[in-house]
Image (cartoon, rainbow, N blue to C red):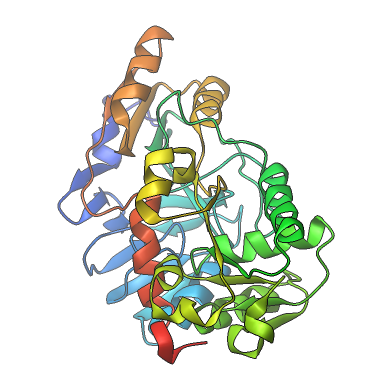
Length: 360
């Protein structure tokens, strides 16, 4: 709770934002943040399909997120849209909404919602480490910080991205007679893996599944240099000694049989769990995540020290316990309809276009 700037009666955090079956709702502004069903007014934090859905009347998002939604759903994904560049406040029904970088994927944002002296930040999905394909996360002072908890357990401490990419390149060197087939989500992960490969000195063409081509082109149009890319079907000799990127599901179906004795890799934070890698038949697990790991989550809470933390979609119990031990008021905010990174993989593959043997 807080006292309003006008000296009126104390207002509760829930007066500004609270969960509903459709998602987080802001009564004074009459809008939702990342709603799970079509609504009249929506603020969208980023373009992943569990946060950005079509069918809303009005959408406010960063220009990049609007472009991603248009590419994935068609330009009629909503009736009206409002582009909100980072740091520029927009007013919705007397509530100020400012989008701040979240460091998750291109155009991803935290939504700072301010009203009568109360500030709530909806972080969406975020990570703290450097990503050459998107703007870095910015800590934003607030009364309430709403955080995901996808990797909200101490066991999740992701290695440096560069080390994982070096492992991939080293494997290509050890097995030049084999193709290296890397599963990567269509939005964000594929482009990040490509950029990390380029930074590591891999200047040869990278071969890509057809489901990744449109979003690769969109990233390139927004200034992310991906270097030479080729359709996976254009690779000679079964792509022996080459790196091929595809949606995770494609690495496990008949589409992959065209490649020379492929080394199957998967870029995901969940690849730190050996059982998950074994279940998927992944020979080369690459622990590369677009979500904050445990040290990044706890460091964010320590830096912000909000009056209250709301924790959602993930391992809430671990972070709630950490908050209790560190005198950080917190509660679980159990929102329905948001997927773990592992589950988004299949959704991203489906959204990307045709798959299987019919696609490149």
